[in-house]
Image 1: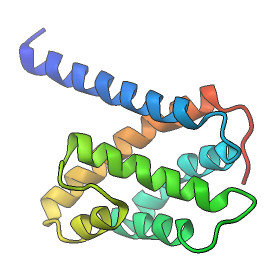
Image 2 (image 1 turned 180 degrees about the vertical axis):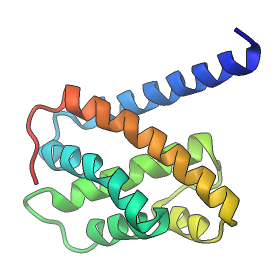
Image 3 (image 1 turned 60 degrees about the vertical axis):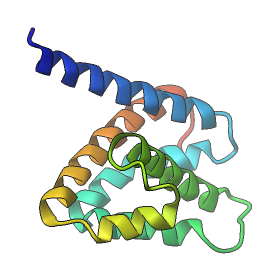
Length: 139
């Protein structure tokens, strides 16, 4: 196996570990079921509406007064996890949710598509781990 291929495999494994740590950190929270449901639906939303629109939706659902159902917490946590992923793997200047949206909206087309692909890869890992680590799903 050449070094480039080994590096890609190690990077994917590293992203998987990053996702596992995120899911492990929230699996006992009261909003974990909603988090699971939203993580599973977000990739389709990104594919259908675009990364910027999907993350703007997550931002809108995560703000405002707190709710007893944990819906806002779940959306907030998803957005925070994506922001942390971007900060770790794509751009280390993206250090809050608003900066994430601002940065995505300013990307050129090629970079926007690359970020979309990488965030979908991360969400795929999250989806796998929520299936295995979070028991109930709420819609």
